[in-house]
Length: 78
Image (cartoon, rainbow, N blue to C red; front, side, top):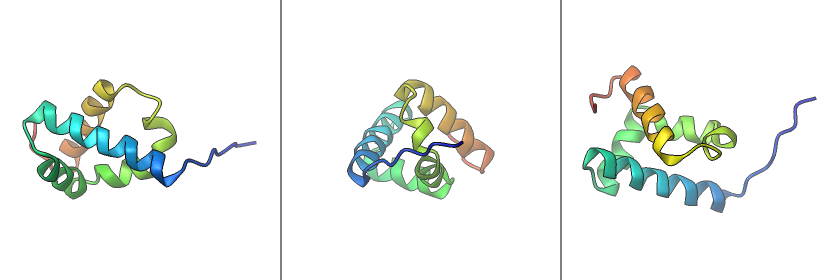
């Protein structure tokens, strides 16, 4: 039996905002630039659909993983 926990919109939003900030810090982007990049290359959608997993990981490892996802979707940030 699969158990799905419900997360509040506030929790998801708080985590996602911190993630966008951390991602931007890694790649020298401001919040608007980081959000634009993450949206364009499908990362925001991925985070939304996989929040139950992503929020249990460190921001450092998720920045690595999400950067890879973006590259697979056409992003150029290394």
